[in-house]
Length: 383
Ligand SMILES: *[C@@H]1O[C@H](CO)[C@@H](O)[C@H](O)[C@H]1NC(C)=O
Ligand SMILES: *[C@@H]1O[C@H](CO)[C@@H](O)[C@H](O)[C@H]1NC(C)=O
Ligand SMILES: *[C@@H]1O[C@H](CO)[C@@H](O)[C@H](O)[C@H]1NC(C)=O
Figure 1: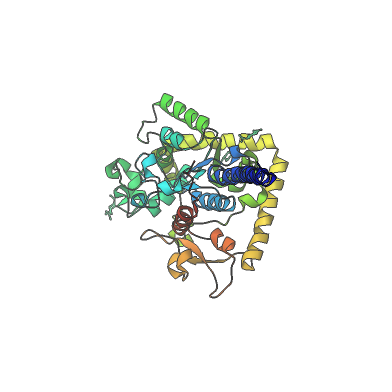
Figure 2: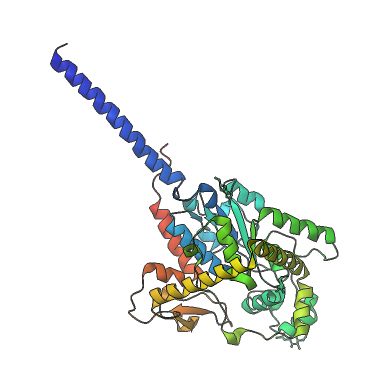
């Protein structure tokens, strides 16, 4: 071989090896961005199931998780079009209810009737499960009000009349929302189990305790967020929120002690669940130290005020009745007869997208995520 030929062969070999080298890296980068879209965070902290319960402040949590997912380029499993905005609630959750374009999922947070085995098929082994519970009487009052026209059981329209003779009105197979022990039902339990079956209640509470790393409590929302931040090693910025999906004051029913007692009796499984997890929340807060918790809550509230100032130039965006909100992206869905509040912005005000998302109702945000997730996906199945 001539020197020229040897040179050309050497050149070709080095070109090929260079190409292989870079292609390997290129492939690795693409592969990494497909299977671990979140390489900045430890992988064990990015697989989250938030079991979204009803009338507990869970929409605020969902919004927080949606924003977290977007910031870290994580995939949120979303319902198929046929299911609507929930995973075909109240049907027991099935992986069939997930839009295939939103898999593999890091986070799942839309409403579902929990079925641990099905969720397990979907999520990695080290997934962290979180949920939220609210005191049973105030939760039931809110639910009665919100689902008055949707629930056959609540059709009489009077909370007092219903609680006088609940079994006269109660229909165990409501197509939209169960009218009794709804939190137990959301968590996959038997809402109609008689409370005298103490073994059942004990086992169910223990099962929820085993499955969920953190059960937040609505009445102590900020304290719960402090625990969440510690559990997931998040930053303060990750837990900032604006309260969403609240009722107008006029849509709330004032509660006498007698009425409260009746609601608690009607939802006694939920009461036991709540009491257990409220006690456990306070144990965890005690373990962290009350002074430290108070300080972190103060920092959270301060950071929130700063955020409102920088996003909206004031303490809060305008709180309005849903029907008065002009910006369609910001108008919350509301059932008949109930005034849900939302936020509106001054006409022509320039607000960063991040700020808009803070106050965006769940239906609109879910649709935006669905669109962005199903279009942004690189082709992952070439390997
Ligand atoms: C995440 O993994 C680290 C070690 O890699 C471990 O110390 C930590 O406890 C894990 N966190 C959770 C919440 O599982
Ligand atoms: C609701 O129940 C009360 C008490 O039974 C009854 O007097 C009232 O007429 C009922 N209202 C409706 C709208 O059914
Ligand atoms: C939750 O538990 C704490 C601590 O035991 C108690 O002080 C508080 O009254 C409980 N909250 C409710 C709403 O039951």
